[in-house]
Length: 303
Image 1 (cartoon, rainbow, N blue to C red):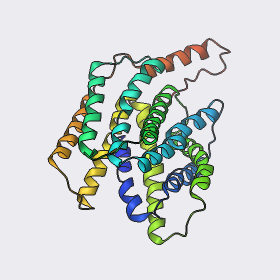
Image 2: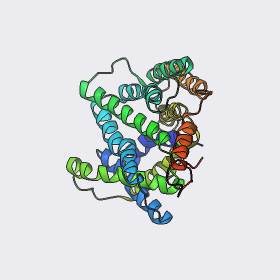
Image 3: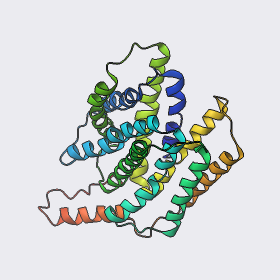
């Protein structure tokens, strides 16, 4: 189920270029996050409690509020192939952060799969005449770090809230961070056509509420490294949509790159470590609660 999220995100380029107003990437990010988040919060009628006020802000900022602007900045400053290739280092960053924050062992299989993922994405989308831009590369790398930190911290912080509420909190937080940036950089929204409304509705409902709920569910039930490798599906799906719908060419090297990416993804889905770090965190929290006042013995976990 988690794989559906990056697969949906792989259609964003097609929807953006064919149905949205031009040169409004931050508006697309804002309308993908904030309206969907407000609807989820209104439907669940549940607000964050305790530490989850600031945790939701941190996670929403990392996963949406910081990640999307850096992603779009990289897309503007770099050819798409370069931006996607730099972003493909995210699984390796997650693996490193998981060692520090989750106590998860870095395996040789994970490291090799991460390297193979970068090589596969490069074969899939990188062009020989691609130019490098220092600001663009830094933005792409910063976006990968932000999303990686969001995945690892989301795994470490187990919330007792229902998944729709947790998703809504993060979408609202990320959307509120994006709101002033969008108006400062892009100005007021343009007049909307029916096609624009349909495109934004798709991004908000499918690419926002549904996809992020599936992604956050994956963070709950899978290891952090397993989740992040699924993100490599996005450039594969984007390339496939371009070939099938936009009549873009597909070379033998691109097909081989897609095979390498899928192989890396499958290899990475093996057991990442014998000890489950998320379970260890839950046990530590339970011990702390039982050793305290004894008023609340509920483990802060939904697993």
